[in-house]
View 1 (cartoon, one colour):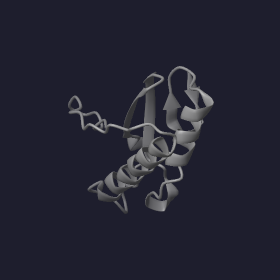
View 2: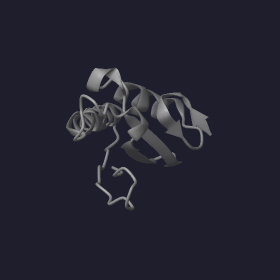
View 3: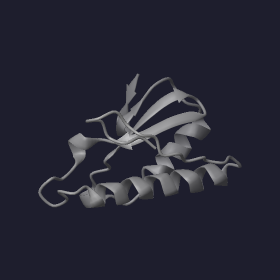
Length: 102
C-alpha cells in the first residue's frame, strides 16, 4: 500500500504513524523530504533515499541529501525513544544503481 510521505507497506498502528510523522518533521534540503520508507512489518522499517527528490543542480554529490536522511533518522530515533521504544539503525549495502538503505 502506498501512503503519503513516501511510505510503502502494510498499515501501521497509531503509535507507529506518530513516530513516522515526527520523523518527517526533519529538516531537509530545500524541504524536499528525500526519504522513502518501506514498512516490512510493523516494527521493521527500511529507510532509503528517494532519488527522484534529489536536487542535482544544487547538490550534485548528494551531501545535503545524506544530511537530510540523517536528520530523518535522528528524529525517528528520538520519537521512538519518547514512546519507550528503541530504534536500531543499520546501514545496508544496496545493489548497484539503487540508493543505500538504512
